[in-house]
Length: 137
Image (cartoon, rainbow, N blue to C red; front, side, top):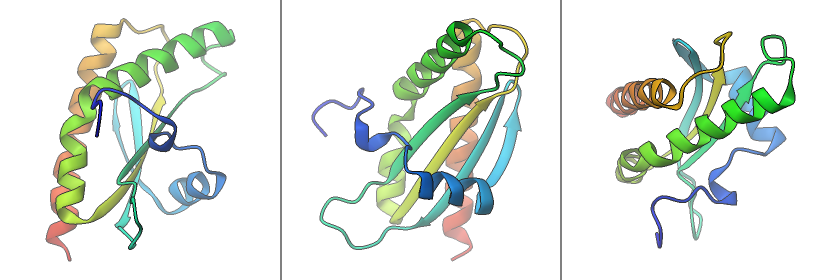
């Protein structure tokens, strides 16, 4: 990977099919103000497999202004981008593919530092879930 701190097109969760599968069959946990949905599956044989994709969302019920929703989404993507580096090698080692979706459930605009700390805790919990998933197979 040329630059480990980028979040390119292939690393973003955009496919309607993948999102539907994530929301229907995926598992979830809460780490207020974040709710994390995830779906893990074995990697299929492909020339360049994608191991990790993520998306973010904010409810318009709690934040009426698109400016506020977009600010929160930018902060969530940035904190994810900077802290996700330990997940991909773990997924490659275990031949797993992971789709993640972070939903902001708070009612007030978060400070970046607070959001970043919660994101780190959520990703660490996800690391434990990956280890548990491999243990069940």
